[in-house]
Amino acid sequence: VGVFVALLGGGFAWLWTTADVSTVGKVDFSNRLAVPPLAKSTVDKDGTRVFDLRMQSGHKEFNKGRRTPTWGFNGDYLGPTLRAERGEKVKVRIANRLKEASTVHWHGMHLPARMDGGPHQMVEPGDTWSPRWKIDQPASTLWYHPHPHGATEKHVQRGLAGMFLVDDKPSSGLELPKKYGVDDVPVIVQDVKFDGADFDHGHGFMQSTGFLGDRTMVNGTMKPYQEVGDELVRLRLLNASTARIYDFGLSDDREFALVGTDGGLLESPARMNRIQLSPGERAEIVVRMKPGEKTVLRSYSHDTYGDAWQQRFSGGDDSFDILQLRAADKLRPSPEIPGELGELEVPHGKDSARERFFELRTSGINGRAMDMSRVDETVTRGTTETWTVRNEDGVPHNFHVHDVQFRVLEVNGRRPPAELRGAKDTVFVPGGTTVKLAMRFDGPADPDTPYMYHCHLLFHEDGGMMGQFVVVDKGDKAGRPPAGHGHG
Ligand code: C2O
Ligand code: CU
Image (cartoon, rainbow, N blue to C red; front, side, top):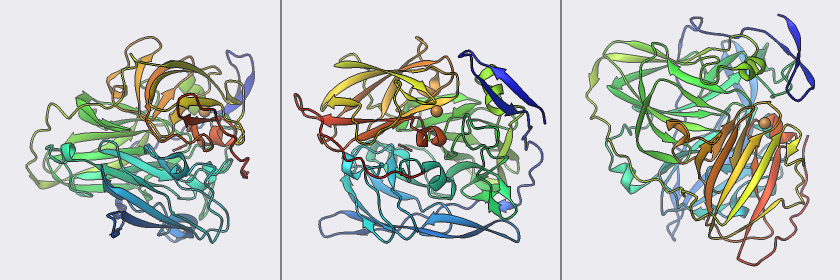
């Protein structure tokens, strides 16, 4: 392991190690992939679908004979998959059985600010919180996780995360794999590190980005394999890691079809053999399998952005073998996936009422660190805006906006690649990159309750790379949000 000092464009120095953490060819895939159960729900008299989530502590045996202390929703690690249809009213009764305050944020969901589960909606130990809203967005793979100011990395790493799948009529009618856990499989990818039985959440020399583990797991399963009984399998990839960026591909480099991004289905499938996801991003891919074969979902090192920044970021080879797919000797035939998947509901930006600029630095956004009592941006309800986001310090960052899905109009002034042409709520912004986004704010006005925008590398978010916006009716002013109480 060598330790180097680098001089970056900005003229400051930092340290990193060149530890190779590649697990390619070294994983024996001995554990069947756990699939998060679908959350049970009941339907109220008024038609509201009601879910229960309990935040609790526990233990899980990730490695044989070693009980790791964990947190989870309704269980020891991660949480059940919530599922509801567009047009439904939902309510989630959240009980905090932890010894510290936390929140539950609905990442990617369009909903009123008070239901958002950001740092202003803290749930104290022993308390409950029951957000309710009406689902009004296309079928998509969303997720939920805590958002306490200053402690999000810790709460997510201990195991608090789960998927929220939205369905809608048009997508249910499409010939896409949709048997949950069979040919439509949630793939929640996290990198981890162990110190004996315990998680090791230390940042070591990698403090510029936050925690980086030395192995990966899927849905909380180490060395996972998934048995495939159909010719086509749809993987709903979620990067639930706190800092690591993955370049997903299959071990024999075969093509797959990208059918969906953060906010739902693409207009038409895009064929590719790599898909890069930074923390918080999702992708739905469909993989074709041959009878009896095995292939491995892998993350390749340094591929898409094979330039210096990722070398700095990872130091050495960080290719990971993530999930083995094992096809049965006989596969059920799958229909061809449709050539058209639907229409995007994200704006083109032509009717943009306002342009805003965001400069990302590890120390803050637009030169300011997060302050819970300060509203940074005031947005008029019912308008479209274009937001231009630029990485100013060369450290890997991404950009996530609450409440909305956006269209990526440009990456460094050019049309974005196929994987960024769908509805997105989180976009990777590597060093030297500028992205231009268009989004529409249709939510109810609430001048006193902010939504967040932030870097989703959780250590950066916790460290202040976050800002707040409110949605107000035309001509109204922002209120003054309470300072709240932070963590960390
Ligand atoms: Cu997934 Cu503001 O977060
Ligand atoms: Cu960042």
